[in-house]
Structure formats: C-alpha cells, structure tokens
Image 1 (cartoon, protein in one colour):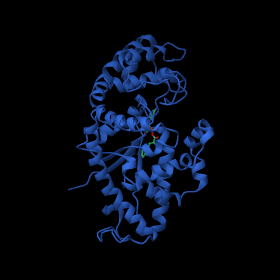
Image 2 (cartoon, protein in one colour):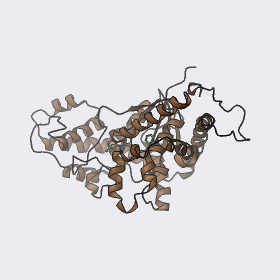
Image 3 (cartoon, helix red, strand yellow):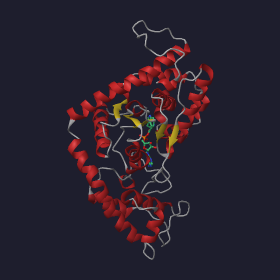
Image 4 (cartoon, protein in one colour):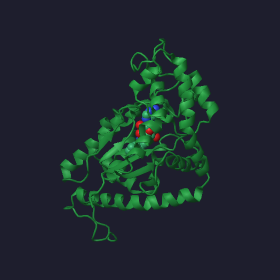
Length: 349
Ligand code: TYM
C-alpha cells in the first residue's frame, strides 16, 4: 500500500476562531484530509507565550476541537490532538533550540510584533516560539504544512533547521513544504483592511467569528470599511477593503473572483455587501449549529483527543528517538530495540 503524504498543522486556542483561520487553515485541512495522512493539533503550548486565564484556556482548547469537527475535520480520517498531550514536542524543541541562532529568532516578524504588543512580558517562550513550531512539524516528518501567509517565515525557519540538522547528522527530517492558499491566505480586518484580521483585535467589528450569529454578521458587513470607488473590481493594492469582501464572497459561495466581478458588473458596493451578508449567514449556519451541538459533548471530544494523542505519540516518539540517537544521547534502558537506529532513514518512518 502506498503511503499518503503527511500533513501537520495547528491552531492556537487563544480565542474564538475567525473566518481567517478558516480560509488560511481549516478550509484547506478539510480539502486535503482524504489525500493525505493528517495530524491536526490545538497548539496550547504556543498559546501560553502570552498570559492566559487557566480555566478559559482549558475551555477554549475543547472549543477549538469542537470547531475543527464543525468545520469538517473527520476524526476517522485525521489525527486530532492537543499539543501538550504529546511531550515529544517540547523535547524536540529543546534539541532544535541548540541548532537555532539568536539572530534567526529575533528576525521573526511575528516576534517583533508580539514583543511590541506585550512589552511588559517579552518572555523567552515568545522568542523561541518558532522553534517549538519547527519541532511540531518535523516530529511528524510532515511533507506539507497548510497555513496562512503570516506563518510563511516560520516555515522557512523550519526548513532551514531540518536542512541544517540533516546536513550535520545525515538524513533525519523530511524538509516540509508550506501550503499557502492562492486566495484567502491573509484575510484582512473589516475595520482596517491594511491589517490582518486577528482574534486579538479589541474592535469586535473588525473580526468575523466562525460562530457569529446572523445579526452579528449583518452588523459587521454593514460597517465594514470599503474604499472610495464604485465598481466591484478586485484590486488588493488600490482597493484592499473591497477586495477582502470579494475574497469572503468567494469563500462563502465558491464563485471565482472573475465570476464575482461579472456578477456585480454595473452594480455597486452596497449590492456586494447585501449578497455577501446573505451568503455568509448561510455558509456559517451549519458550522455554528454543529459547533453548538458539539460544544458541550466533552466526553466525545475527550475520546477523540485520547485516540489522537496515542496515534500522534507513536509517530512523534519514533522521530525523537532517531534524533536522540543521531546526536549521541544514550538510549534509555526502557526503549525497545526496535527503536530506529542511526542507520534508519527518515523515509522509513
Ligand atoms: P494561529 O493560531 O495564529 O492561526 C492558525 C492558522 O490560521 C491562519 N490565519 C489566517 N489565515 C488567513 N487570514 C487570517 N486573517 C488568518 N489568521 C490566522 C494562520 O496562518 C494559521 O495557519 N503558530 C501557529 C500555530 C502552530 C502551527 C504549528 C501551525 C503551532 N504549531 C505547526 C502549523 C504548523 C499560529 O499561531 O497560528
């Protein structure tokens, strides 16, 4: 049997998920899950690089799993797990941190932005964040990592670390490719289309949540900032606000951008907004309803996570043992002899 290529990706549980998470990540996860062996995780360890309320973090972790399912992730096809349930992530992150320079981490745009936002607590975790992300990916020997455009730089670092390690110790890690969707890789704020839509935006009108009810969708689209101009024509540079709404319409209806331009020929922005509102309400309705159904099904969600963690650990553990052996750590006496040896090529995993 030929093995399917492997995918790993993750989302932080640091708030309600937005339509940006859907277009940049979840939508593509769903599309790729049949043709790939997928590992999808809730990145709870990444979330604690900024302060979190413990009870809320626990709650949001489960809610994020419920949303994965509501968006169409099939737990019988894909492995769904919580990052902190697989200790190998932090173990590999330590090894990789010994192969990453301070300069590389300080050049990360997200680090620069976040450290400016959280000036009172620029912690080492925030700095080392991309190393943990590299460990997440490399542990699973992932071929492909579907993410939004904001994660591209972290993927480049991951590839560099994998190549550096392989070069020094011999083939150990697969070098992963990013999968950044051609449309919707960066959904912009509804209030400031020059900024990414972010769940931490203090202005709720800027963010479209996947669980927004119809009246919130109506209000947010009505108030969405558009540009001066009349024609409905896609132009990210000159008309970022309008173009962002066109991308959302594409996501909600499946129509291509040229089809949308034709649909609104001779019509104005108000017509697009009206059609978009209705399309989004219908598009998000089943996601919201399924989420509400699953939200409190804690036992069900926990059983999926238990199975997911077991499968994820099996694969993660193999890679970690291979890495430990490569770098010269003494094999722990309780590790089985079937553990990969230094002669094992990563392709055998
Ligand atoms: P996070 O939790 O910020 O976002 C999760 C995913 O959603 C995408 N995304 C967007 N895409 C388009 N437009 C937007 N406005 C938008 N907002 C978010 C992100 O690009 C991302 O793909 N570090 C990661 C989580 C992570 C991870 C990993 C991802 C941890 N380990 C390993 C891939 C592989 C993060 O903070 O994503």
